[in-house]
Length: 104
Image (cartoon, rainbow, N blue to C red; front, side):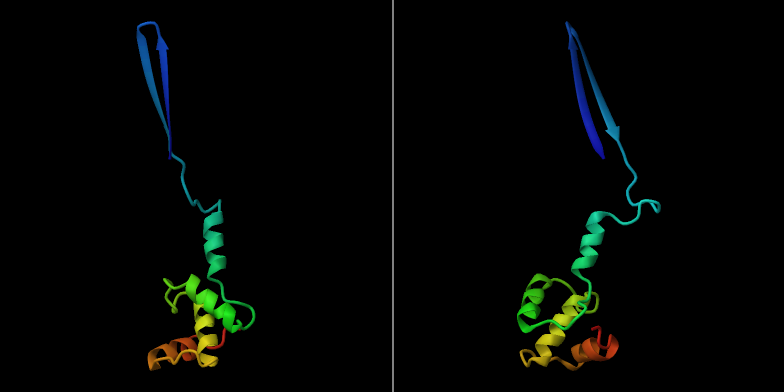
């Protein structure tokens, strides 16, 4: 929404015009926004296994993400578990290895 305020002063006459422009967002013909595409790419599963250093960086960057909904966080956790840096609980092991399988 864009709001523009125009004030016109002519001698003793003051006119205030407020214009409000409302644009529709996310219509089907427009497709996803740039912000939505960038967000999707940040959470996309890697096409190769992550190194331990990459896994640590991803884990820090995606600390608020849930492993069930963020493929790159799952990949980072798998790498850390395989490197012996973390020990998964039974539930997390099922999530990372059984439910989604190998994603790369």
